[in-house]
Image 1: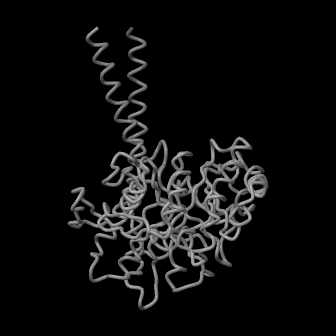
Image 2: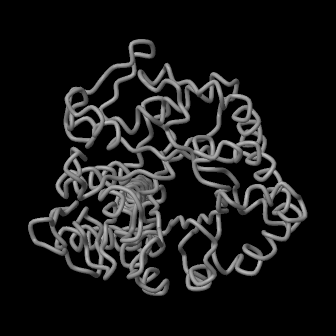
Image 3: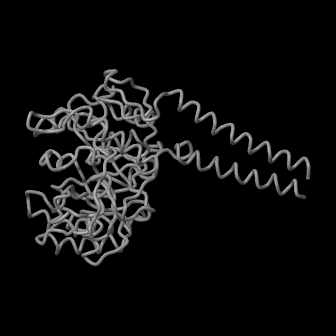
Length: 399
């Protein structure tokens, strides 16, 4: 009996080790909280079928697109990639009519679901801070009507509705505990947060530490924004320590939401990234900084980290962006946020194990140091599992 109990204990230990090891290294689930933004503002981008192949090779299972492109929705069917789709800002006024919202969902969502794993609808993008201030009055009615249309079609249990917000929606973001929404948007923001709270939907934030560094490179330590080792900062009120700006920005949003009287709303990062090239006045826009920023985010995602304010809630992050998009307007940086070139070669390597090769050896940065290490760790996980099964066989034979 003692031998039997000893073997049971050993099996239990090995099972825990195997599941922990597999979960940490993504062999059972990939990186659940990491997604990628798949923009299409280019004239030389690959076909959606090739994009899907790239995502599969990267083991990425979440993507966000900025429309409801039927080619993409069709190409991504019967895959394991979850998609967030977008209602363009110019559609918001139309969607104030519940019948138009029902028609939109019936046309753009229902024909593709569930074969295509649509998990979210972004109603507009950065509406609270858009130059067209008339859009703000349309936002909440459009959000409510899209959700109601999903409910009528029995899809609301599967598809969340929200809207991505610029960090500029905050009047204060430093220190994080001072996080406050701008007064001019507080009325509509309260209505929007009420919707999120009732439907258990996330608050999406587009957060770019790059912009803060670019504007004040002499005041903000580069290591702090790149997730590199640094002394960080301590919030004087909460005494929480922050070793990177992104987590501080997210917690500032959480505090701003709490100040509006809402608790428990999950905050997710719908966009974050770093440009690999910029104009002469775009300080910090280099391939080295872009590689460091995205590689270190990936490393944090592998550890399933939360922010200092919510350490036990894994922070969901969508990187911007999958490709460099040559038709995007604005400064040079806008066309150089991609992890990949349009031919699917790497702009730089952040450690995602892709089928494509790095564009230049000097830009290559490996998260795990070598492909051999990936093979060895997978082999170790496999043999731990075999060992577990062997113990079970011994027990059946002995008892």
